[in-house]
Image 1 (cartoon, one colour):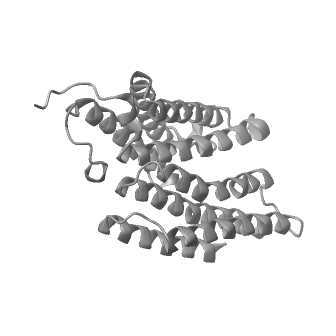
Image 2 (cartoon, chains in turn cyan, orange; image 1 turned 60 degrees about the vertical axis):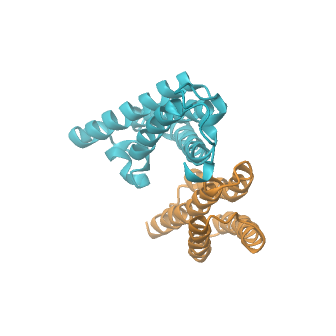
Length: 145
Length: 117
């Protein structure tokens, strides 16, 4: 019998979720370091981009925490906010470049990071959806996820 | 710096092969990654020493930020991948190893742009 049901919280960080958490962790550390440095040394030069960098850092930190600890609701919110952020900042940085004297991690849809910032929340939302639909008694062969 | 990045790309290729074969990394591969991690620490020390010389307009904070961040990725990848003995665990190592050349290239660009100014 394969009754669809909510999977355990640990499912979020197992299988390919392990890779997702690691990538989120990298972005959390990188974005936190970048925004801390920008705000500490050049806050007045480009307030909007540097504030957005700080927001991105907080979002990545929370998303990493949520995925690594299986807090599904928080993960949905943070990854959703991340996707909205990268789309909004990506669009406005193209349309209103004068408001962005310096780049953020989400500028130009994350082009400076190989568009990983754009792809990551889409993969994250897919992973959250995928793991919430997994049948309870399905074999957990991580190698084939 | 760039040479070490190239070595990392070689290991990345090796990891892709192991993923396709669905073989868990071990032995020579993990020993090699440990050596690369030591090499990255060496590059970090060299990068700091280089700052003591003619550094032109290199943004020191940004440069040091990347420099002190890069040694952590491979060890973190090895530790995090140990909890997943599958292709996914190997993929974690692949991400960790690919992050190093990306950051090495970033460091190289920061240095070249700063000293050329």
